[in-house]
Image 1 (spheres, rainbow, N blue to C red):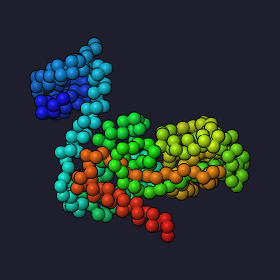
Image 2: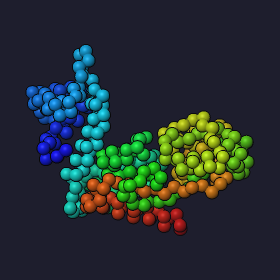
Image 3: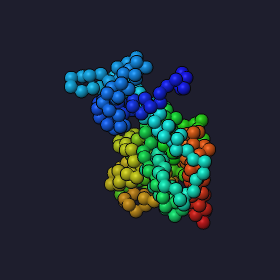
Length: 305
């Protein structure tokens, strides 16, 4: 399709219509009159050969194609916003803007907090917003990367996109202090026999795959979408949990649990900042990546000392 033949203003109208599901509210949202918004809807219906909004009783619902277009339109608008806010020069001390980074609570705790402090010291007008990584990141990584400034997550989940290396981490187990079924050291038999608390998403999959290769099939009693809640779900139970080592140290003392080394050589986590190629030459984004890499390097030096 030739983009030159398209009215890209219709992208904004399409998003408003699909999200509001009401012509009047959609028009008010983007500053168009009701007749102008109705005309935009008519053009969109002709273009897609679909109703997009179907009247059901006294309200509108999205058609099947409308549901598909909702996510795609949000991604397209995010991409266009980032395209037209690209800068040739960037002065962090003088600029005022917000970066959006998708990350797990683990990454925010062990790295994001340090990055935010660096922003506060070096660029007081720069804000950072951390959002959760959606479950479908491995299926459509480009869709997420087009709507944020970057994603902090380990290698092994996505590929084919540029990344800046950040830091490496290992894995440890959590065991309740009063769990007398585990001695001073966790054994493979313990890991296979005892119930587990697991992180719900796929980011620990390399570690879980490794367990499968060792013949250990975790019996999951509880799953949760937050790494930082794992100690509290282990405390006072027979359950065990696998957690990144740096986070376990940050959380030490917050719950009555023991931190134990795995009974095998665990696969390390290599965390990185991933981004959409659209950002590669943007001056503001280059500063973001360089700052993230510098903060990560400083953390590494601190851990060595």
